[in-house]
Length: 429
Image 1 (cartoon, rainbow, N blue to C red):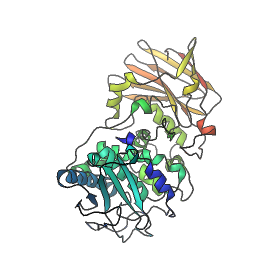
Image 2: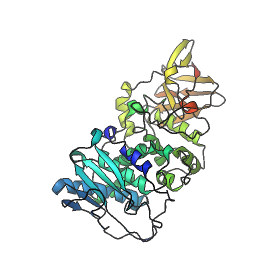
Image 3: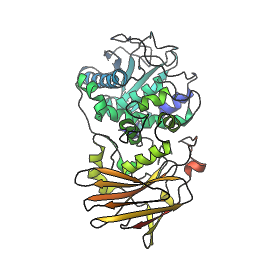
Image 4: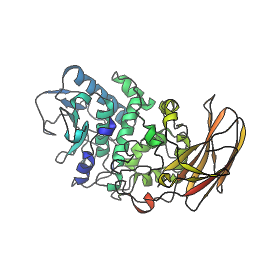
């Protein structure tokens, strides 16, 4: 459902004439039930309430299912993970005493542009409100996605920061997927009778177009709806990088440099105290060779779909030398994943020649046990013994110094691909 969600939230949020204030932690216990405000959004007389939400235009089972889903998400992200409450206004100077207001959700017949849902914000009250096409109101990939936009708005610091713009969609899809699939939200789902549901990871895009800028907002070809596995990687922190983990996405708002218009990567770089962001991005792509990112179900999707993913990144030059295709040169923080072909147990050596800045890894997976290991390239080369029951891939990520870029307007160094050649012995690409 995420592919048809509205872009309107970004334009609306960026147009708000409200100064972004620092994200604050809730310091006082909120009331058990928040106050409803019929004046937020179009209002109406037909509605159903829960403790933190009011849904207009739905009653009975659909309303109950929608509210339980949203309450499960609220319980996970606010009560368990400590995000700033959606009940606290954007323009509150302090979070200590509220007021605490319900989020309004409007079930509608249609939305402009064929969207399934959209988040709005109310200037006067500083509250978010949602519109969702009625057939999707109880679908987490739509409604929890839009609530994720609302939570980003209530976190304050990304508002009116254009370089975060495309990342709003990345975060909202991560938010919905985390609610649906993650053990982090198991308690919240269980509390409100919600079951775990399937991930909507799009590996044909994430891996098949891995050469794109890590978060690319280009109209019609970008990946900003699909790029959320990077946020899952930061959250699950399979490499145990100091400073990253369960609270990374929450802290990317809390620790965002106020009014800086920096990119989220700049914030992640500060949060990662044990590794450079270039190392983190490089290892993310290395793990995406086999989707070993800590996500509970993404790897099983990969194993069932891998034969259909486009890996045509290189052209053979003969004698074990390969050159990256010009159209698939990895751009800023993007990568090439190159599965290797071998026979039996072999010693694999790989060498990269380029004038660019990169992070490369030899990713190896045992097909029997599922165990993975990662060999970093040092001074342009890496080698490893690969057993008969192991598979391997070379992963090359374009990891220059951080750039202040707008994902909706890619140009210059951000849009420049990494030109390289790869020389292999012991295996072929």
